[in-house]
Image (cartoon, rainbow, N blue to C red):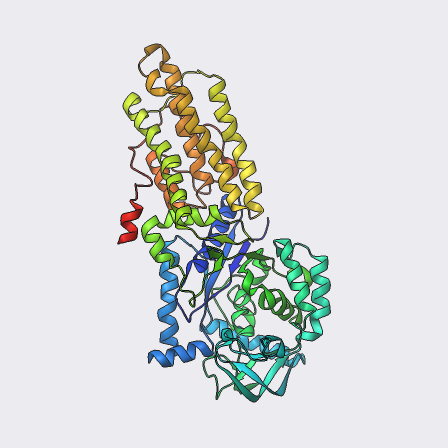
Length: 527
């Protein structure tokens, strides 16, 4: 019995509302979680919010509310968006939750007792915006720090440090001996190059309470709060049940049953140094063996005309607004269809329209035509055709039969867009099948009754198969499709259960309702 498939995403920083990049990452993880269940795996899907930090403290002060109220308000926006987009997680990680704080403090105490933490005074230039000390490598050609760092001040203060440098050789060897640690594999060089460029120096993990109060106090020195690394990164294990017995946490998974993470989904911008250097070294220092390291799935960026989205450029896209126009299900389809996992893609209104029209004219029209003809010619009752068969029928059945294996292979390799394409081969062939068989002409000839029955049955059966394969991508649309077919898959239905004959002789189909109603894009944009 394989362990549950544990998938987790980067947690979202609650200093600003969600944007399209957040939506893509969560939908990607949700699609994979749904696919793994469809493929026979038990799944634990964790996501959440990162709520501590100096930026949050400053934003809360500016808004005139407490930091907790500030992060709760923004966290709610994330929660509502995930519900709207059909992102169904099993665990919700909020870093202000008490169970998380207990684990963070216990971890820090373990590392302190093991001699992995030390206190040191440091003088340097500090970026208030980025909440980090800067080095000379961050200076521009003129010797100054660029605008991207915001306000930069010179500070001298004492802080606690983690002996990251002691583990760099281990990490380098681990990465080279575990080519499956990072997907896609070409991202591995980014990490190895970073390790050669002083990224592996000891890591400051605290801030004085006098400068930052919105954080988790260090258990061995409460004049300091933990800085982001041992707080935000720890959620991937704290909410998975790590140290639950030791700290008294209840209601969380049994850690040993689900760890390590089979898929830790992050954006390429936080691969180095946080998730590919700091995070595995933190685990290694805590005693996690090599076979207990997570697998990193690194996705690219959605750009606008080749440029990265940013507040400065004013090109950040609100997924709420997009889903209001294109519908949440169509947005899920577009995001999964138009980006190859691991690579960048351009967010395009034109491409969204193409994707929606593909759904409406391809899948929606196929369903509408099949149901309308069956209702018109057979009062919605299916018959297999009394044994009638021909090469045209056989060809469609072969396409339907070949799709699941190819689909599973692509999905398992995180090629979601290719998985969609494999399922879509059925849609394309079924539409061609209508054109080839011309059931509206067959209906005029009583001698072709058996052939007409077989054609209508083949269309409905093909749609049932498509509804299963596309269900991880568009769960609600596929439920509506199945409802119109009058068919509900058995509880626990899996890809391996797909076989010709899902719909029985005499099956009663439902009435057609537009699955993807016509959208007047120009009018929607004007509104």
